[in-house]
Length: 139
Image (cartoon, rainbow, N blue to C red):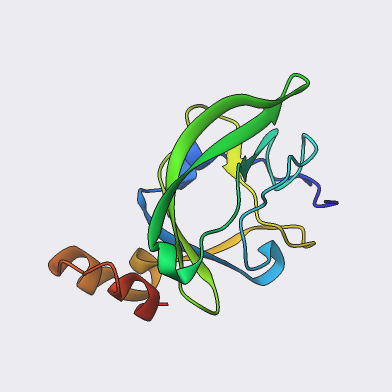
């Protein structure tokens, strides 16, 4: 993975609110599932998902995200939920344990782009309770 941090340092502890997200654009279509080098994905310690992405039949699964720092591919960690929507995946992400950590996509670009309910459907997200099948249809 060759996505370097660049001049802008980001932290998902400050920049992210809990919600369902989809990786798109230069970030790729998936969360990284291999340990990326430090200083990649716009942060000091990039986060990657341990384990495989789920099948559609598995529904929503829990996975561990690890953050690479100090020579350890899993210096910090937290759990996320993942769902296979057929053509793409959605991830229920929360703030990272500390700064400067960030969820890392598997793409080759220089920045992460996440689509969220809040960006696309803010009113609906706040006012309605969605079934798990709705997570996929909102993207």
